[in-house]
Amino acid sequence: MRKLTVEIEPIEALKDRFREIYDKVESIELVEFLRLDVERGMKVAVVDYHMVEGFHIDDIEGLDWMDNLVVLKEEDDVFTCLMKVRIPHEFRDMLRNFDLDLIWDAPTVFSEDRMLITVMGEEDQLRELLDLLKQFVEIRSVSFRPASFEPRDVLACLTDKQREIMVAAMKHGYFEYPKRINSEELAHKVGVSKSTVVEHLRKAEGRLMENLLAGY
Image (cartoon, rainbow, N blue to C red; front, side, top):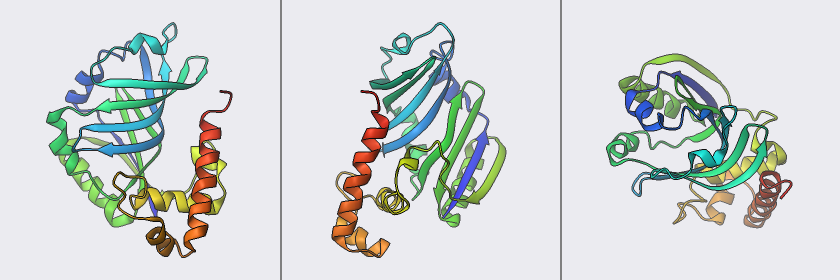
């Protein structure tokens, strides 16, 4: 598995979409990507809002395409939120092309003049993504490197085995509804017993929730 980081020039359609918040938000940074449902036009993620000084997360409430479902943490001008975004119909056909077997990772950052996207996956899938991006956007820089987990990652609170199984579960659709893979099939893919998979997933989910909701 490898990691691809691409910096791209934001397209005008996205600039227009976010223009109404960029006077209040310096950048939006991905913490953890939870779900993308192109058919229903929805994506859910945990993100850090880096607010412009003097503005609060409540100042960007009321948008018809974005909901901050809950504020998980507040530190100075940074608000960690569970966010749901409704994908406009005009973007859904394009996004279907990007429905590859990849895992969104950090750093992934959106701002008025910069988009930095990081994903993990097999090299052929990463190169397919890169070829697709070239059809739609101007690419500023590209970086390929071995997949690794930085200390700031949410998954850093997990053991190596818990992390391996959680990543495999996400990659193969265990957390989707309906599931694309069950615990027995997942166990076969990672080479351990079903009971071991279930135990590691249970402990990993507990650790992740404790980490995300620390202080609450």
